[in-house]
Amino acid sequence: MTLLIAGLVLWTTTHLLRSLLPELRDTLQQTFGRLTKSIIALVILVSLLMMIHGFNNAAFISLWTVPPWAFYVNNLLMVLALYIYLTTATVPGTAFLFGSLKHPQLIGFQIWSVSHMLVNGDLAAMVFFGGLFVWAVVQWLLSSNAPSVADRALVDGTLVDRSSASITSAWGHLGAVVVVYAVICAVHVLFGRWPFAPA
Image (cartoon, rainbow, N blue to C red):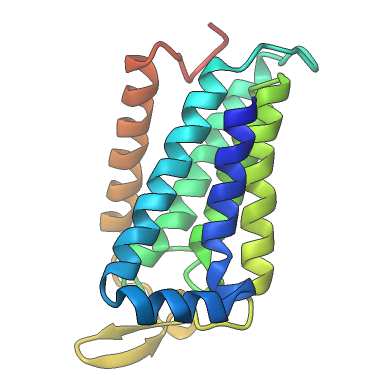
């Protein structure tokens, strides 16, 4: 559990560096130059590995029994989370819904966290997924006034507002959601976690 919490603190601190400690971020930028982003990415990767290892090796302390229906809700929420998250990879007018959301990646991440808390009724899961949910909410609140890729995007060299763009084709976006969802399910199965129903 200690490693899980340490990784969570490191993840949160690193992601909030720009918002809460801009002077420190500027100092790092001046010191390391172009390497700053690589260093930050490495720290984030280390924090992720710490959280995963800590979560997988934490003692199982049950808080409640997960009902069977929670797994079906979990899968529906996962599809929704991916759909919203991946709107940042599309151009205006290529997603049926949610194209004008502010910071859709953080919103998708929040839904992902909630979906996993639903199907994990132990203390370590609440610390892991609950902690990431709190980070995503704080990050979203701090970033609410900052520019977002969800607001505008370049289309043929012109800035287009997502909220007013007419839908031209959403099948590519839907296809990407299906592919990513299938890959995530395959990874779960590979590591012995059946994602569709209680094991």
